[in-house]
Image (tube, rainbow, N blue to C red):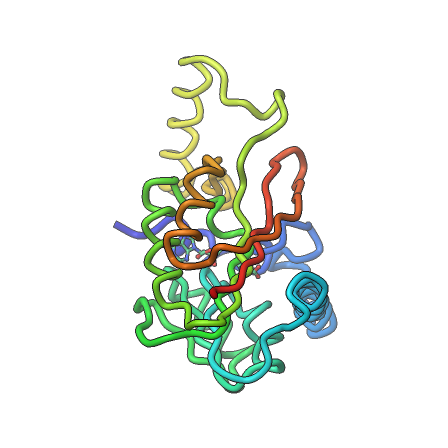
Length: 234
Ligand SMILES: C[S@@+](CC[C@H](N)C(=O)[O-])C[C@H]1O[C@@H](n2cnc3c(N)ncnc32)[C@H](O)[C@@H]1O
């Protein structure tokens, strides 16, 4: 079965990554695309600054992994800090665009990578993956973190009351809406789903992977709250 994110990427890849109308397919111009990738530069600069502040060190050189890299918005910026970047994603259409716009020096793949990484990053990805699957992916990724390696991984954990999925009727409506979107009778973005993780499970995964120091930074995307977990393996 086609992955929902492949359906989203085939129609609205850039909007699927940053949900602002200016990134819809019909609005894209070379300038708009350049602006889109500039947001990745700024996000990565913030991540590096946080590592510096918390650990008085930051990724520099070595090998990095961006999980759920999409069109390479962050992977492209990461490549300026390290020697090699692997961008891993489930969607071929996302990766085709990543190779086109953010390809230099980055290996984009749908195959989960092997080997060790000095930096593992993921932003606005785990929130779209059901927690049992997402926790397994998180553990699998953290097992690849080299001693002394850095992790910057964002997860969602709760939402404000008006976003809570209430009642059986509302859930049935949501299921019907998803089925229509998969059949192409609703816009592709209707397939974007949000999930909340138990932070105890997330922190436990970090600790069990040897990342015993963490620094948490709150995130809030329209009432979907979560944290960036910044960590360094001892
Ligand atoms: C909102 S986009 C974020 C892209 C990128 N992290 C960024 O910030 O520019 C979410 C990405 O996660 C990918 N994704 C969803 N489920 C995934 C999974 N189970 N494994 C890997 N990637 C996944 C999607 O295909 C999509 O490209």
